[in-house]
Amino acid sequence: MKFLILIMRLMGITSLLPGILVADIVTTTDGSRLVGEVLGMEDGNLTLLTKYAGSVRVSLSEITTIQTENPAYLRLEDNRTIEGIVSPADAGKLNVGVPPVLVELKNLQHLWREFEQDPVLVAKERLAKANLMKWKNSMGFDLAGSSGNTEDFGLGLRADSTYGNKFRTVDLYLSYNNSHKENVSIVDETKGGAEYASQFTDHIGWYAKTDLESDRLEEIDIRATVASGLKYILWNEEDRNLSLRAGAAFRYEVYQEESGNDLDDPAIDFGIEHSRRFSDLLSVETDVTIVPSISDFGNYLLTQDSALVIPLGKESPWKIRSGLANSYNSTPAPGKEGLDLRYYIRLVYSWE
Image: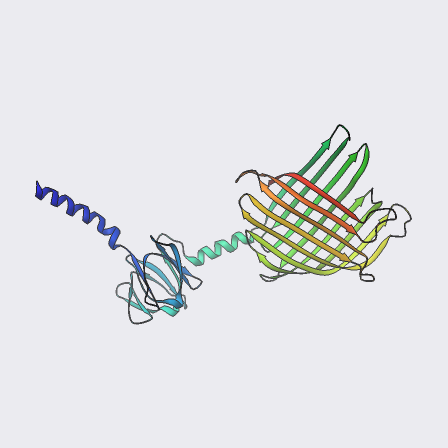
């Protein structure tokens, strides 16, 4: 009986040996010995999956030796690819495969395992995906009203379409806002526009845009702004975007009455575009534009739209956009306010 128990214990210990012994080892320049599973290496950093600290990234310059229990694929700077178990050699060198091939650590470009894809192919797929042009569309509805001591009703519609990829886009939009209070119009405007933007490099691009507007209450028959210039892109990532733009512009404004405020003048276009996604359920978006006339910098048009965007579910096409939009004309028609300020809550449906 004792002999049977001993055999069972030995079998249990033996069954645990693969989990104990099968491990990769990375030694660093400060003498640290990191034990885990080498997942791969690219961009000069090796990723090691450990039980005690999760995924750990170690710079190649901080590594003295690498040892693997199972075969790996290594690509050198001269694009040679070698397959085999990796073991330590002289300082700064590795042995790969059987018969061993001596490799200098400093010449290591990529490392990946059998269950991983070649980093070069991954990069090509990522670039192809980034270059894929596709449509993104959205339709938004603003609806507000009250009855009782005061009767008011407000309706807002906005349609947006974007065709492009990470490096170049065409944006189109059309919006209409109408509000009545005590059967008197307090907002009645129609806006539309288009913009084309393209990047030369990761941080520099150019743009061309036009905006059209008609506003009965501001007595504007038509306001047209055309601009083209350069963009400096600070961030262009999935969770955050920030760009600054500056260029030459032209302002054309025709008013309903002979107010003397008609404008036909070259101008300058300055703008800031920013978006930040904090989580799958919260984003912030801001767009600010100022267009001063060249002949008189005191004559300018300022527009701004800032909003919180809240998706109605992680995979839902519906979201709520709650924001503040304003337009300031430094030279309004006589008897009119220069500032139009509007708070809104918009229900938006998006599709591709």
